Image (cartoon, helix red, strand yellow):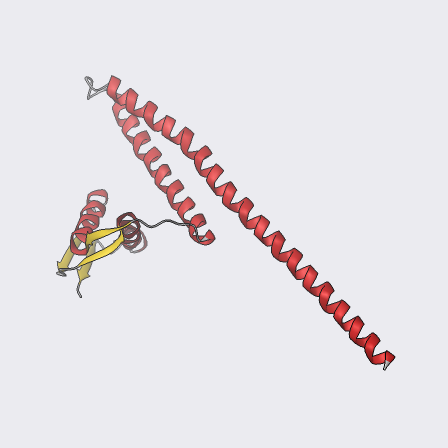
Amino acid sequence: SMDEQRILQDLASVVMDKMELRIAALRSIAREAEREKEFVAVAGHELRKPLNNLLLTIQVMQGELEDLPEHPAQKWLAKAHTYTTDMGTLLTELLDVARAGQGTMKLTRVPLDLEQLVADVVEQVQLLNPSHSISLSGSIHSFVMADRRRLEQGMTNLLTNAVKYAPDSLDIHVEISQ
């Protein structure tokens, strides 16, 4: 009947309109994701460039004062070097989080001695936190294919959080096992 045909046409028109709206929304989301990806790339470059220039300037100044180890500026330059390096690390971590959210983070998988990696991180965090005693026990004789920097980053975050969020616990124990 004519009424049924008209109802079907109206229904088809409504469905098509909704599909067109959804397609337009998906295109808009895709454009936004591309803009976000471009922003992360440009921001990373634009932030890293002055940071690297600052680090280079600090290193040159430290070289100029190398023959004067007791000069008061040595202490401040050492602190500035540490803070600048820390800012670079934070920038890298921020960009990594953005890339992970976009699904564009690249992993560099290499064979790793997992036990040695953990020992290295424990040693590094211990050196940075002499007020704490960080011990390592256990043994695994295992090589894995993994991204060394990412694993180090995760392990370092875990241990520094243990130091930061349990300041009254001066003994931190890390145990590794299979």
